Length: 393
Image (tube, rainbow, N blue to C red; front, side):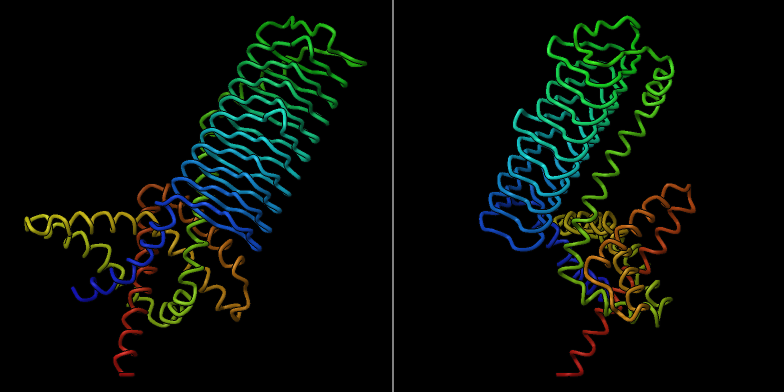
């Protein structure tokens, strides 16, 4: 019982950090001279950030300059500030109303590039609907339900969807495959077009400028393959969202508890079986405490708290374990790795562990064992530090 209470005492700060970072509105109103990581119901970037920005939440708004990459996962996303490098984002709706220095990679529901949007690199889109009113200096590769293109594409375009409307200008070669293709009066193709649609006779009007348009049945196969992969594309969007969210949590954990994780590696290496035992005590002991709390009527509030806390620890267990494993590998390399190296390796390990859980039975069993060892090592470290403090007093 004492071990469980102490272990809960260790995990509570982890939960508190995550809750603090994810439950409140975050507004950045002063210039940031380094990378920025934030999460919340609402996140506003109202000042220049000299490095990368990684944000997650319900409503995300970027109104000022981001000098490096902008990485986002959210429900409603608006970018009105200049971004010096790439945008990588997953979410519900995304509006880009500014200049982007390099590539834009999107997975989401609805996407809008306004007339003010200028993408100096390439655009890769996986979305339900997309409207492109701005300019893409590079190439466009889009997989969507409906696509409306009123802007310009500086290089080639590969467009796949259900309904595609072109009323803008494309300078490179184009591949277009959709159930229905509409060519507007303002459309201009500066290079050859290969297309497929249910109606093979698409009216290109006066849009072909020194170019030809040819029907290709092969594009139907590519489109059908895309439709067959619709679930896969949705899964890719979810996976991107997961990776962005996991990255943010790992950044927070390593920033707040990196030294503690590094200390825990010593005990993990020396007493792995004992760490596993402590982890099992936590994984199977806390549910017993929760049950007892619910049986005792006056303990119901405590039981509800413990249940939420326990679910939180299970949800982030693979991230905690992956970060611990990353610190372990860092120690084996003489502790010379940078903060980012540790976090990115932990992200890769966490993704691998998450994939392993999809293996029937064995995956779940292996995941439970690793999480038990991870949490057990942290618990054992906490107990040892507590014992040393007692000796010191």
